[in-house]
Length: 117
Image (cartoon, rainbow, N blue to C red; front, side, top):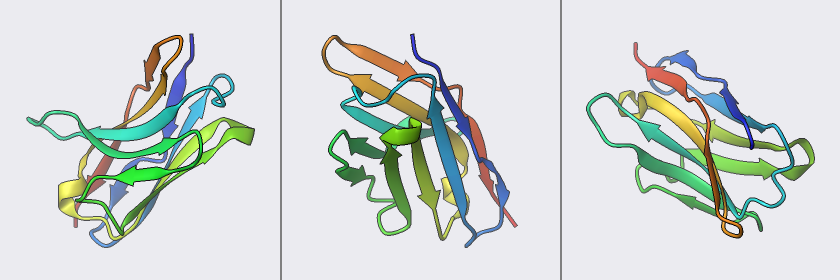
């Protein structure tokens, strides 16, 4: 079993920045894909950004050029740097880790991000 603990959320003004962290309770080396998802009130959970074990990032169109995902195997942490935040970025952000064999899929408890003036 792996615990994923997110931190770094909060209230920020439009145009501001936040950095989310996802700390895993064990090595993330074996996770094929790690990523960040978000869920706004009344909406379905959506993918924001993912990163492969090789460091390749993939982003939702809505965050391209503003968000950067990075993976640091040495400290078992995945980060999401969020710049130029918009009110529509307001959501609970969840960390996810997937190992394809044997199949394992883990979620964190989420961290709230609110973008408002």
